Length: 84
Image (tube, rainbow, N blue to C red; front, side):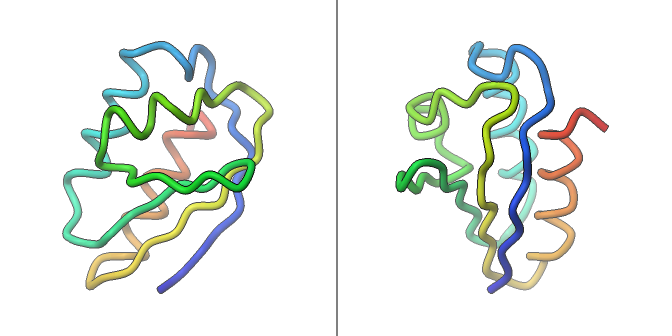
């Protein structure tokens, strides 16, 4: 299991389309992937869970992944969240 703290820099991250895209990115990986913000931890592969986080630009989240492709998964999700 690995964790990484990230500051969200992408814009419109609370809108349904960017959240759906993030879920699609997370769903490409076999690892279990979670995002944690303000003591709330959700499955990054769950559209309803991700929407419930209501992430905004400037929020700090902890990415958590566990599995065979955990490193690659976290790198890709981090890139998405920072708008790289």
